[in-house]
Image (cartoon, rainbow, N blue to C red; front, top):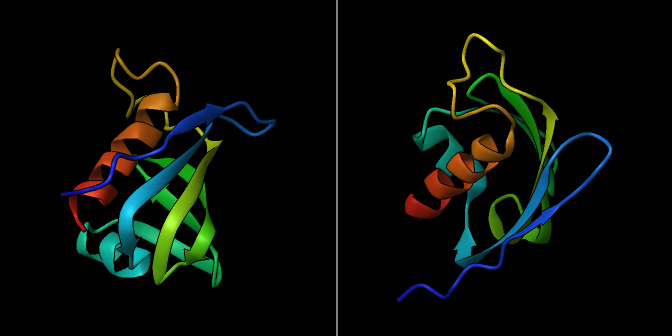
Length: 106
C-alpha cells in the first residue's frame, strides 16, 4: 500500500510551487518518457518539464532524478490561454495534474 503523500502549495516569485513525497522512489526520466511528456534534464536533481504547454521546474529534494523520493514542482510559465479550459484559470491545476500522472505511473 502506498504511503500518504505530503504536498504543500508554496508561493514563489515565479509561480505556484508544490512539494510532493512519493511512497517509494521513482525514476522520473523513465516515467516522463513513458507518459510522453517532454523534459530537459539540467543536472542530476533538476529538470525543466513542458506539460500542457506550461513550463515547470522540477527539483528533487530527496534523491535524484532517477530515484526521486521528494520533489518540488514550480511553474515557470503558465499554460497558453488557448490551451487552458475555463477550470484552468491559473497554473495550480497543471501542477496537480502532473503530480497525479507521476504518482499513478510508479
